[in-house]
Amino acid sequence: MPPLKTLEDLFVHELKDLYSAEQQLIKALPKMAKAASSEHLRAGFEEHLEQTKGHAERLEKILDDLGQSHRGTKCKAMEGLVEEGKQMIDEDAPPEVKDAGLIAAAQRVEHYEIAGYGTACTFAQILGHTEAEKMLHDTLQEERETDEKLSDLALSEINVAAQSVDGQE
Image (cartoon, rainbow, N blue to C red; front, side):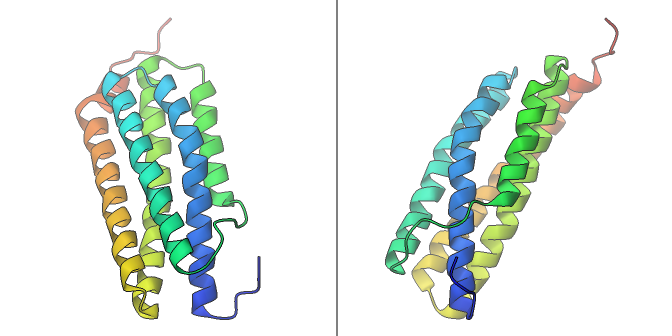
């Protein structure tokens, strides 16, 4: 990575970090969907996969408009979050409990993305990148909506089902 000398440099760095995060998530979401026993959770992961592909395309457009490559260093935070999700997939747990764990892992991802897109949106606003700001804000709203959907699903179905598992074999 080139040195970060200006806010513009930091903005581009943040965009590339988010792009790396989205690319990792595009690979992880199908595995999470496959591991989900709840049809509603599986459908939610599949829906978010399509949305995530759109987020990556927006980032590509912003980077292209800035005359920047899409390549940057691998997002270590997302790498860790994806690894935690993989560990949950591999857990020997009742399906209802595993689904609750998958939602927890997915919400950690959403919260990371909300923080990243919020930051990038603020940088775009300060730097006067109006079109980028709009696209980043749209993605930020979608990430917030996904987090809310996961919370609603956890409260209405997934965590309730997990709580009813008695742990006896």
